[in-house]
Image 1 (cartoon, rainbow, N blue to C red):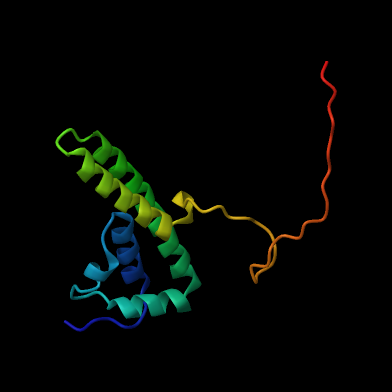
Image 2 (cartoon, rainbow, N blue to C red):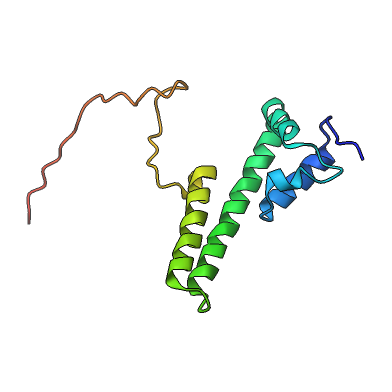
Length: 130
């Protein structure tokens, strides 16, 4: 079966549903009936609505990974070292793919070119103790 190269909402929905469920895009795109990975990235760059849908799917994926971390941490059959490696891997992936769980501090403001926020002054209020 030929791989689709033209965007369809049906294929976009399938991809996003499967991403949200925790599937790997690269492996998914090896299946017949789905576009190759490069095509999906081209669609993301060209289609804002699909890009937003995909971003929501990735956020849902990150929420599912949080649940996985909790399960791994409570699994009595896993050794401490194995738990730590699994949890660290999941946390790293969540932080890289999703700002929601990132440990980076983001400063909001500035302009579209990521220029820093302008400091315009400091106000100090001195409160006398009662």
